[in-house]
Amino acid sequence: MHTKTILLVEDNPDDRELIRLALQQADIPCKVETVFDGAKLADYLFAVGEYCHRDARQMPDLILLDLKLPKLSGCKALQMLQRVRGRPNLPPVIVFTSSDDEQDIADAYSAGANSYIRKPVDFNEFIEKIRQVLLYWLDLNVPPPSRLRVAPSLFT
Image (cartoon, rainbow, N blue to C red; front, side, top):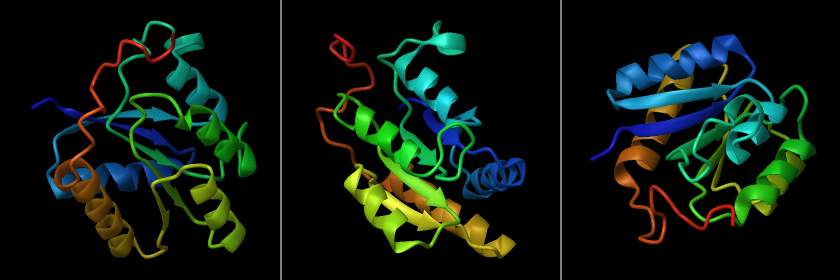
């Protein structure tokens, strides 16, 4: 069994730290790749810019995406999700955001998000929600057989 990889798309350092604490408490061995804005998300997924050394066929096991990001906020983050959603091997994308706007929720699902979760304000609730999300998506959920770790036709 391989070590799971999470791509965390989060600009708030406090939220990044809370997510790391939740990972420790959930005792899920995984690697966390972090990007801080939407432009870096695109670079990471398409293996360009500072991520040009990354094998574009190697996708993380889960993407945690905040909607309120510099350089790609709101609808632009969802446009990026739509742009990559049809690619083979794309992992589940969980929108994890503070927005409770019904339009944001509808837009996230329309763009292909697998789940939409509001960030709780309470510290313990925040930790518990992340723990539950990660346990489900990284441990309990069984991805479809066609979702291979490496898909040779990813960007051809």
